[in-house]
Image (cartoon, rainbow, N blue to C red):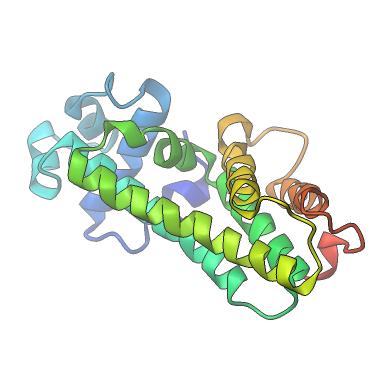
Length: 211
């Protein structure tokens, strides 16, 4: 089961309430059983609804997965774009991007696992759209790194490869994070911000200084 934040806050834009309940149920089912092993009856039952009621809001199971993936990817992209466009130098913006991106993947680890790791189950058109959002996500991080290289704050011989490594590192938090672990999402965010700054050759900045 997801955290209280996962069950409520992240789906605020989804209406009506029945559609939001089905999304939450879908996340729980896909995370526990995987997309292909999950039935529409299982999803509807978790939402306290009949299988027929699911089709009122989502024509297929794939459409439900697409909606989950779309909302999740847009939320994640927004986090990185706000950091990229924020105030401060490249080090401050990169630390901010990593800290908040990691924290989202930890706080919403159940949803994030579905969003990030069930992509292959999407239909061709939906898959192409989500891949486009993932490319924008990569580009937002790459833009910050490129700024740091231009200003001399970062020493990065391969900007594209480093950007992909940073995004992958952050996303992987969703795979292993548990709510009863020793570190909080904020602590993991700070840890990863420091690791990434060292990765790009910026050792004189403390990531906790600019929140």
